[in-house]
Image (cartoon, rainbow, N blue to C red; front, top):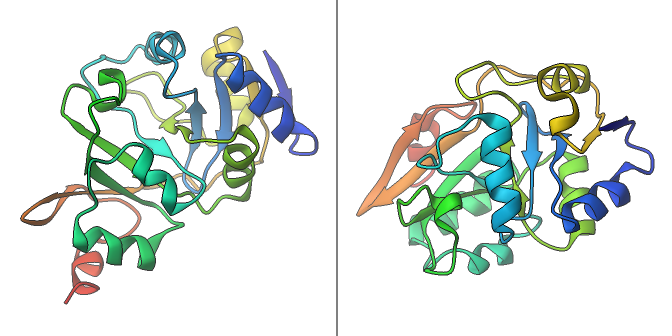
Length: 202
């Protein structure tokens, strides 16, 4: 496991992701753990590292809105407005998933959570990698997520292949998670109040 500062880290992080490795990086809330969402072995390793049940879905981080089509069966009309208003930002939207999306990503729900992070390092990593990556929080399941690179190293040690040190993240609430069934509904209240999200559709 190597910990590094942002300079020169993006290319290395992308290289390790392509090799099926696990990379930690800062986001607008906590540090996240990234793997290739199309690599079953990498996904299985991610669940083992986090000690997380495979029945729990893993959200994905994208570089641009067009990448939603890689995973989503369709985009609810209300989500189009929310993507325009809140992305990039701490809003995870849960879309109906295409059949090809791994059950390790969907947790067997048939849906997939996607967010466009505003953090410059996430944007650069995803761009350099050339596709979406997982963005689950850097923690052992049920424990608080890491807000610094040192905490990531302390929690995971050599189980994480690479840590992009982007300083201290804000922590606090995670992203707000919103689903859709005839209308939008709140799965998890986070940094953006759900009442504010609903008001933007009125």
